[in-house]
Length: 156
Length: 277
Image 1: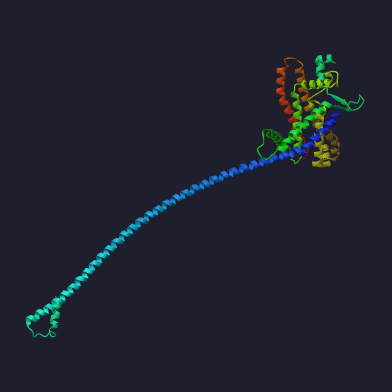
Image 2: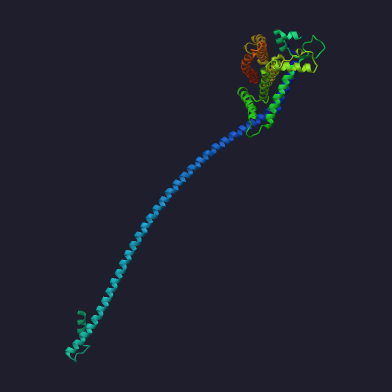
């Protein structure tokens, strides 16, 4: 019950235990715990970051998809427009060509008619001259009376 | 000797006597005596503490810790948290000191939960079997080292030495002396101040000395009383079993609490010592 030399022995034991704990037990244990805590903290932060990144990527993909869709719609719209335009143009050109061909035909016919007319006129002139020669007899000078014939021809 | 064991007084007295070895031939010299049981159990438990924590420290990795590893690390973290909350200076000593005190005192207190007769009776049988003693009653052994004032006083003296050491290291020798002499009463007049110095010194010294004394006596008193009640319960015969169980359950709280209080007060005292007023 009373204080005796045990006190000194226990004091030495206490000092040795504390020293040993301070030297060999506490630093590795606490170091490992703190390092692990840091690792877990980093891991949590990284997972948070990854989640954020994923959300960002998802948003981006959605936006891109939307963009692509609207672009595609636009392109289709444009293509439709262009197709209509081409059809219109072609129709127009066809009409024009037809008109041209018809006009050309008309003019050709006109020209042919004129030529034939001219021909006929010449023949009629000569026929008239021949006819006149026959009627008046043979004394008529062809050269002296050609102006009358010419006039006659022009009247035809 | 055997007749003495039959009486209640004898039984209790036997349980409360340390196994002692005298270091001198002089029987009147009561100081040069070693309480062999206290020393053996406390040092053994201290070594168990160091072995457990050292092996946990060796196995500590960054990977996922096992359950046992987790338990050890929980204790370490618990102590570390308490130290960080209370002690704001930087010290490589405080946390391991607190851990040592907490776990060591806890293990020593834990011996209290072993039924009071087991180990002393076993030691007595071994003593008889090896022929060292005539009767098993001649073997004295207290298995709870914290019921020995020598141990609690040794812990308190160690803490007290550290209080002085930290005070002097942080405040300097003069600062420490000033703290002892110029508080709590101070005066502008030098003559009055000189008169107040002895009063201050006396009060501060009492404050300072009260710390290790209260530390050691609190632990000793709680565990001694608990042990005594265990012995009394063990003495009543068959009905001791439920009573023993109830008291043991209650005592689980006490042993943890006392270890925690000792640790906490150590941290608080050292943090007070290392802060300037």
